[in-house]
Each structure stands twice: as structure tokens, then as C-alpha cells.
Image (spheres, rainbow, N blue to C red):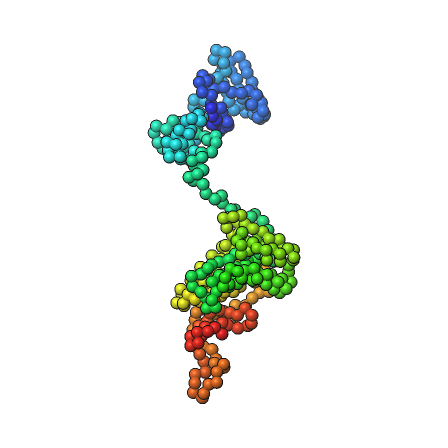
Amino acid sequence: MGYGDVQHDNITIKKVSYVEGLGHNLFSIGQFYDKDLEVNFKAKRCSVRNEEGEELLVGKRESDLYTINLSDVQTDKQVCLLSKASMKQSWLWHRRLSHLNFRYINDLVNGKLVKGLPELKYEREHLCAACEKGKMKRAPHKPKPEPSTKAPLELLHMDLCGPMRTQSLGGKKYILVIVDDYSRYTWVKFLRTKDETPDVIITFLKTTQVNLQKPVKFLRTDNGTKFKNNKVEEYLESVGISHQYSAARTPQQNGVVERRKRTLVEVARTMLSHSNLPLFLWAEAVSTACYTQNRSMIHRRFKKTPYVLINNRTPTIKYFHIFGCKCFVLNDRENLNKFSAKADEGIFIGYSSTSTAYRVYLKKTKTVI
């Protein structure tokens, strides 16, 4: 009906069988021999010895039986041999306890935490349909023990974020986030509508492969029509790039870009809150967050920044400034008179991606230079 361990002095007898209604505790001589132990029987006593000849158990003959007395068991552990509950009993108490997990039911028995619960071992022999319907949740997606890629651009993760309630200064409402699996280097592209996604992806793939002189092998996205369409598929087939899709309603399979997307939005929200800037500058905040994190976040596996891993050189950050700080720009765009102010007041909103320059929002003209 069940199994347990019995301890006698410093000896532990494992997997002792419990047979309901049996009048005696029986030892198996064959199992003693299987453990390389020696069993000796004499007229009035029996003994179990190890290979060194040390007596481990000693018994005496009573009538026709050799008896070993274990009534003086000394152990800190409570010996508990529980009979197994019938299937009907197990499911009865499972339902009585509001569909409680069987492990918790056995803990109640072993710890004697309640009265009235029969001291049996409760097990389930099949799934409870009601529990599956009422308690079902997603299985955890554990990280891979080994990385999937061995070089930059082997695998790119992509996802679209938006639409934003507030348009950016340039009328954008979506963010296309692209993450390199090997280095975790991130690119962000801003779109007005979802329809722009295929053209932006194709242009990005062409430009990046030329700039870094490395081929893209795999692209991983969700099943949205912004990624799964004829235009993107035809281009990927023509250049030999494999397109991988995450399972439907399973964003965990595209977790690399999902987490980075969340990080960028949270950092941008923090920067806008600290600088008290209007929300239409959210795109500038996201772009600045991406720019700085590529040069400052540390890859756990390589202990290097994404910029170093993808460009093979150490970046400098001495030119970094606080997002949203006040700045002044020399006014060399207008024909000024002798006593006009030579500089215009502006707000620092990031770094240029096409030249060595800062991006500044001018209050007077409400434009970005």
C-alpha cells in the first residue's frame, strides 16, 4: 500500500513495504545478499554482518521464527508508512478541499495540520478537467543554456510598438524596434503608419549589411501582417534570409525585442518626466535612450557593451549631455543687425544619427535643428 524508511541506530532500511493486515514485519534475505551482506542462522539466534564482519542486526529465535526487535528505534525522523488512498478517496478529498493540489493534501496529512483527514497517501491517476479549465496558465519560457548565435547580424529580432496617442514632432505614431541577438545592439525606426513597415525593413536590411559588412541570416518577428506579407517575403527569399515567426499569442518567444521595447519606453517616459517636456517629444526621448544604452549597457555573457561587440571599437561618451537641458545655438541662419542676439535658446533632445551633431529643439521657431 505504500513505502517508507526505517532507521535503527545508524542503519537506515530504505523502501520498506507496508502491507495492510500483515501480522509480522518480514525481512527479505535475498535483498540482504544483494547488498553484499552476510546472513547467519543458528539454533537460537541470527545475525546480519557486513563485509568487515561487523554485526549490524541481531535476532533471536522464538518458536519457528527468527525475530529482530526494532521497538527501540532511536531517530529524530518520524517513521511514517502511509497506505495509499483509493482513487475514490483521493478525488473525494480533492473536491471537498475546493480542488486543492494533491501535494498540499499530503502535507496536511504528514504535518498533522488538520483533524478528520484520513492518514493516507493521496495521489491522482489522471488530470482533473475542472482544474485544467479553471487554473490553466502559460508554461514558463526558460532561457536557453547556450546562445543561438555566434556573430553579429546572424539573427535579428523585430517588433512594432504603437500607435502612440500623441504624435511625435514629425507626425510619427509607431516605433519599429530591431535587436541583434548576438550583441543586443538596438536600432529604432519611427513610422507614421503600419503600411510603412515593409519598406523600412527592406531599407534597413540593405543599409546595415553594407555598413557592417556582415550578412543577416535569420529574422524573427510575430505573425502580424506588418511583417508577414508578400513584399517582405519576396525580398527575404531573394537574398536568402530565413523568416522565423513566434507562435500566435506567445510574445515570450520573441522576448528579446519585447523586453528591449519595454525598457526603451520606460526610460523615455522617465526622461520626459524629469525634464518636464511635452509628450510630442517622445520619439526624441526614445531615440536618445537607444543611443545611450547601446554605448552603456553591459552584455552579461561578454561583459562588453553592444557597441563594442558590433563595431569592434570602444565608444567615447564624454560628449553626452542631459536630455532636456537648456542650451544655446549660434544663430547663423538669419541676417542679424548689429544688436540682435547672436544665440537662440533651445532644448537638447539627442544626437544626430547621420552626422556628428546634436539635435536641439528651438523654442522660438518650434523646430528641430
